[in-house]
Length: 68
Image (cartoon, rainbow, N blue to C red; front, side):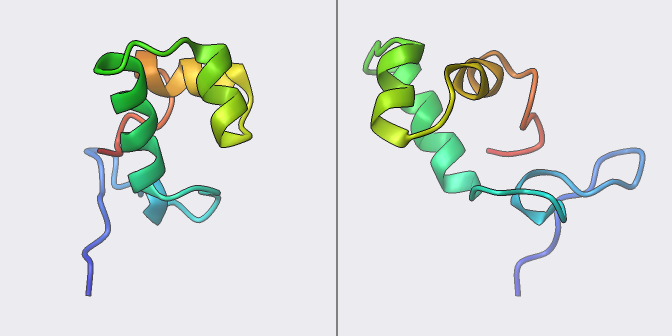
């Protein structure tokens, strides 16, 4: 069984958070599309069906920081 990722404040992070809607694997794939393939936020959003602001937040580390 996978152990939940917990931060210093004893809060769950990533897909283990009760309100998480996507798996950590998707977050990792999105970051890879941005960093290695050089795709823009808009194109990644079109490919994944997520909002551009969600993609930007993940890639800049503002949201989903406890994930992959």
